[in-house]
Amino acid sequence: MGTFSEAWAAKELPEHMKHPLTIHVGLPKCGSSSMQQGLWNLIPELDFVGPDFAGLTGEQIINRVLTLEELQYRQGHEEIALEAGQRFCGKRTTLISNERLTQGPASFPTLVPFGDRARIAHRLKELFPEARILLVLRNQFPLLMSLFGERLKGPHVAHHSFGQWFALQKANQARGMGSFFDVGDYYPLFSIYRELFGPENIKTVLFEEFVESPEEFHRNTLAFMGLEWEHCKQFWRPTHENSRVSHLELVLQKLMWRFPRGRELVPRNIRRSVGRTSRKFLAIRPTYTDDQTSFLTGVFAEGNAHLALETGLPLERHGYPLA
Image 1 (cartoon, helix red, strand yellow):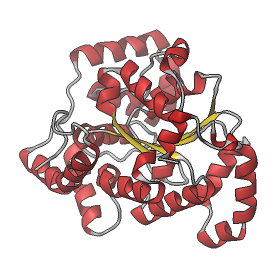
Image 2 (image 1 turned 135 degrees about the horizontal axis):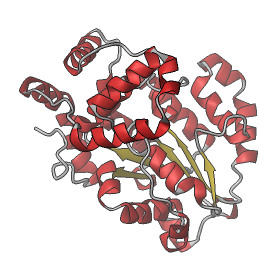
Image 3 (image 1 turned 180 degrees about the horizontal axis):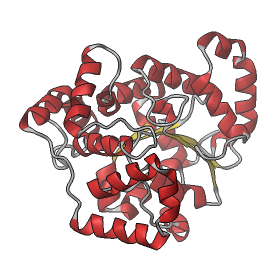
């Protein structure tokens, strides 16, 4: 038999593998919610195991992969493997999609050291040795801006300007404490999954391609999962989750979090109107200084160059940091 993908195309797989399993190793702010809620979760033929169905067996299994310490995981490994075999038995094409595979056991914005990401990858390989891996990457410049904006939306936000936040990430990185720069360090993540699952079983695509041509993006990724776009497109509901917000919206959100009663006093239609107005007229966002741009290029250029060479992805065309 040739590669897994070739075998699937020729329908030469064993019976239990004719409905392949794909793992979307999600990264934050790379369109996961739009893909999950706009299509994947709506396809009847797809056994979708996502992040928002707590308590179901599939999600419980993935939670154990993510959260158990090594000793606990090894002690319960046989039970977990048995449950995984029963739950993911190949009756339907399956997609496991979860950003926590790169973020960790808690909710965003927990950062996972690469060692933990590698441990998660090894556990997934043990449980699903024939799985396909889908990675969606995004230009690190807008990625980090989006991560910064996300930090301003919660009730316990620190009052940092972008410059202060950027300096904090540099300091944390220098101390080896983990920083949001680690989220954009794609090449080590790509390398560990390629090594474990084989290059023929990994598909790496760009968020920018999803934005530019969502239909073509879905056509390619669904084909990788073993599904046909011409059938699945009837279920597609174009959506954009986690849209970026302007400074004015961020200020309003922070005020409303600080004064919870304030949200109740402002009519919903006014809040929506303010949001639309601010996006249209006041969408002034931070920009990188020359020093920040140079620093990020130094952080990401080498890994991006390897990615472009080994995958053929058009990173330069989409403005990714490159030397």
